[in-house]
Image (cartoon, rainbow, N blue to C red; front, top):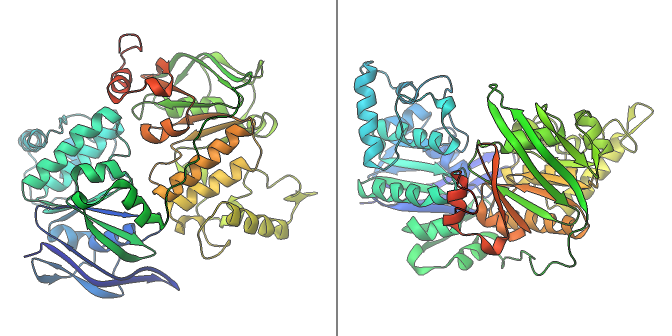
Length: 502
């Protein structure tokens, strides 16, 4: 008997149909990959299964019996656990305390519970210290804590949303091995991802969604990444990498012996130095939490230096504030956190597209905002950047992650920067959106822009980078040409081994 069945489930938000007569059948001890473009309905379907959304019609069955899912508590009661893309952890508490939160009816003997958590962790090869404070854990380890939370609660069905997007290349293999162990223990896994190589590695079957519908179901052994990509976007992929035209020019940005502190006062950047040339994409990779965010914030002026200097075309900009750097020095910034830093979620799409220039002509004249110009500009950018939405006046929070990213990219690129700083440009995006973003970055390189591309997604970074730097604990462990990069070498450098030793 099938373990999980979704029958004719639909969900609308006003006139927008997020799900339309979705049917899905998943067996026990099966890993089912769910693929689709951003906005295809994957997250909406997962939210229905976890009780966050109530469907307009249709039903969900477990082992042939219909179940009611009015809340996450109902889902947990039916042994469905969800690991969200944005973690639900209390940073000040330990791993054990986080896992026990909300369980109720369990012994509060923390030593005893920590021992049980340790057993579960070892069973699946997660290597999590139950006594560690969550705030001290790297992002990849926090994700494992989220998985341990649902396993501790005896979940039989696990929903994973982009689980490897925060992992270093050499961590992904062990994580996928852990999923296989979870499947072998009898669990059912729904694996929402955009990484087709991982689908081929662990999935038994693949469901492809497009515009709220299931448009195909295939066995992983009977398909290829190229075919899955075509099914997702309805056409062949077209990332125009090719051979670059000409060589990079002079150094535009120089980071010289930069030191800076983290939010907690610890040393985050340690005498870090590199240069960035016009018409070049310099890719910087590393495990999350090793100084990437602090470096980006130092460059754009959001975080002070403790020592060192930032030079643009030979002139120090360390004394300039954010506005002077962004406007006068012409630095474009696509931040890591689209929600907290990149967008004002309650603003319309049209307003978000002019956040950089709302107080300058032609957006504003003599202190009066020209709303007609804003509307016309929005129509133009929405068309050119393929931002998919119902209306330019729609709040940004209601767009998919890929379309939110396109808003930020459009705003920053259209400011015509000399330096473009892009963080996690493709994180959580589908293959169509990734292709669009990568091609835009390559167009900027061809225009002579100096691009600093910071990403944990090595495969996408290598598609556009002219040089690849690796950062660990706030230091550069080396800079490589893309053709010299291997997962093993990069993994060692991410762990702190110098390029020469690796």
